[in-house]
Image (cartoon, rainbow, N blue to C red; front, side):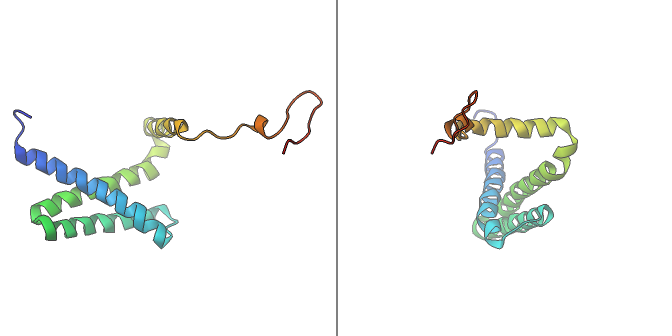
Length: 127
């Protein structure tokens, strides 16, 4: 991209990588721990974000590790906002509902009519 410093592109790449790595790591680790409480889930993601930054710093250098950690904490803050702020801010809740409605293209719930014959005077179960 003309006019964009290469260091800025690498920084954005590391931050995005930290975001994705924290999201993937939390999706893998947290179900094994059996996280039930939202606060514990968010704190656990924070620990994972720190871990992603630490490991990245050991492998890629201190600056890259810091940027990976920033991306991880973006995921943590996003989860906290979705959990604690979204119920009180209608615009955030509407955006979350829009995401959920888009998932209907992947799964169609079976219709009640396919299991039961519904009609006037005909209430027999179809097996």
